[in-house]
Image (tube, rainbow, N blue to C red; front, side, top):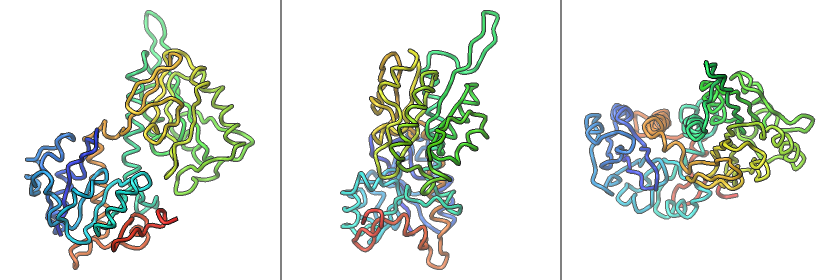
Length: 373
C-alpha cells in the first residue's frame, strides 16, 4: 500500500495533507509514504523532517507514481495523478459542487474520489471531520484578524488617564467557527453576543458567557438542523431576523459572520443599510466571503471600507494558520484511513455509512447521491 502526499498548487494554499507524525503512523500500519518535494515548506515542515519520519521524497509531479492512495488538501488536478495505480483513491477537500468538471475527470480516469468535506457529522466520525477542525481555526483567526484591524483595544481597561470600554463583538452563525469566535473574543475581553437560526445554539452561546440574540415569536430551526447545519429560513423569519439584527448591529464594534449552507451560496446576513448604521471604525469579518459572502460588498482577500466600516474576509482562512491547520487536517486524514484499515488486506476498507457519504466516483462513474440528484 503506497500513500502519496502532494504539494498543493492552489493559489494561497499553505497547508499539506500529512505531517511527520502522520507519516510515522501510516508506516506503522504497513504502508509506504511518498511525499512530493517541498510539500510541507509553507506549513513549516522541511523535507528532512519527512525523511526522518520514514517518507520517501518524490520529485515534483512524480509523487503519485505507483500510489494506491493520494492525499491532498484541495482537490488535485487530474494530471497530477498520472501514474497512480488503477482505482487509486484520492482523499481531499474536493468542492464537488463548484468543481464538477474535475470530479467528472476523476471518474473518467478511474480514480475513486473521496470528498472529505462530505464526512457525515456522526459521533464516530468526529475525529475525521475536516470541516470542523478547519472551521475551529477559522473562527479563532477571524477574531484575531478583526482585532488587528480594529483601531481600539478589546478589553475594558481602567487606567489613570481614564477608562477604555470593552469592545462589543457580535457573532452571526453559531456553528464550530462561530463558537470558537465567541470563545476567542471572550478571552480577549470583549462583550460578546451571538445569533443563529437554530434554537439549540442558545444554550451553547450562554455556556460560553455570551448574550444570545434570537428572534422571538417566529419559528426557527428546532434542534441542530440537517446534519448540524442551518438551512434556508422562511421569508417571515428572514424579515424578523433582519429587523432584530438591524437594531443590534448598530451598537456593535466587531461583527463576525460565519453562516454557510452546504452546496448553496452563503446567505446574506448584513446589508449595505446595516453597514451604514454601524459606527465609523467598526470592523466586519466575513468568514463566508469565498462562498458569495454573508456581507453585502465583501470581497475575498481585500479590505473594503464602506461608511467608515472596514470589511474583510479571506478566501482560505485556515491557510493563514498553516502549521496548526495542516497538523489537524493531517490527523483527520489519518484517523479516517486508520479507522478502516484491514490488516489482512493491508489497506483501508470503507464501510457503507461513511464510504457512501464521502465517495464521489467509483468504477468510472459518479456514484454519490448528492451529485446525482
